[in-house]
Image (cartoon, rainbow, N blue to C red; front, side, top):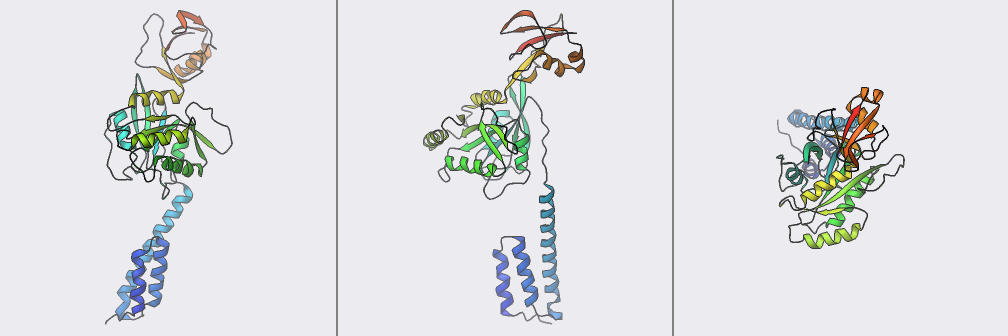
Length: 331
């Protein structure tokens, strides 16, 4: 039996091709079901429309439930510190991380290659620093879990593309700031004290001005630095040629505000390949707690070898440590 569908049905059906959301598509399918003649010749078409509508409704409900529960992408911290790498589409984040770590990542010249957060380790001198590659920040879409990745990290690196004019680097950086400020995340200079405002996350950051080997780089870098002033440290780099990457590594280490300290067993040499990492301002007692809880309970004194102490100098538990100090704990 022929369907004999009216012209109104076909006009309404055309709307499905341009519908942008699941909700719009569901509304159009409901309209089609209302228009379609109800007889044996249209039973298969009615069933097809109902199936499509059911699938769309199911997907919409799952999406709503997921948003309510807030999906998480927890990245376990590893190494001396965790730095989340943030950037707009095609900024070159993945290639930069690949150049910094030597680990092959999925790199392409089209946007949204990175869909999930990906932790990799960057060697710096005799320690490892964890870098987390992330999906791009875009005004069009951002995963609900994305802000939490930034909140949990110790610091951040924002990668900006110097090779483009639309949008220009200044506009791109401001867009990133605005998007995350709406999530109560604000980026601050790497050496700035974190404000203690309740409900806000203040994340120390560096700006990596990438693709400094491109024709527009010099002009864009000048405009970017003028706009930033002294509010942020901006480093000119190229993931492609590795220009500026050693300076970037040193700056990342400095931003983490940590020191490397070595433990020495009495009568033996210190292992300088495996330091403990502690926050700047840590004391001998902090070091003892890190080595083992028994040391902190029974510690009598320590001996120190370092830049600001003579060899084997005896110090008390409240002595403030410096980078690359060697500590011999006595209980």
